[in-house]
Length: 137
Image 1 (cartoon, rainbow, N blue to C red):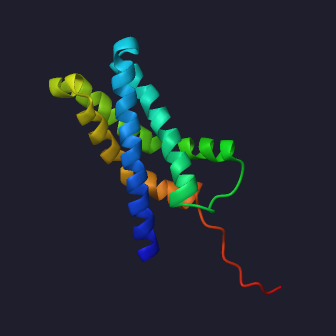
Image 2 (cartoon, rainbow, N blue to C red):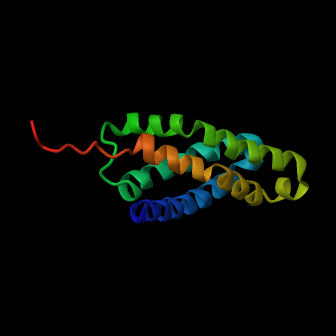
């Protein structure tokens, strides 16, 4: 259980970095492409950063294979988390004037909505540990 707790804390630190990347991207793009397109683009930028950091730090040495395949698996595995995340973002931007003016609140709520599911899917599917063998033939 301790190992899972450490992984979850690392995942949370990576998520916090992803939150900063996500928010900066939304703010950087919203005036040129609109808030909803900025939110979509920002998700993929942040998800890519999160995958990379989780690959080299949180789940280091787990889930071997080509990086591009693992990145695609990470995005696919976290699709439900994506729907929770960006669904929350879109709903808040559409319904809460403060979130439309300051999307950082919608980004934060979306990140929280998908966090636990994304951790479980990342740990058990994308970065799963190799099966333990007894070494006996």
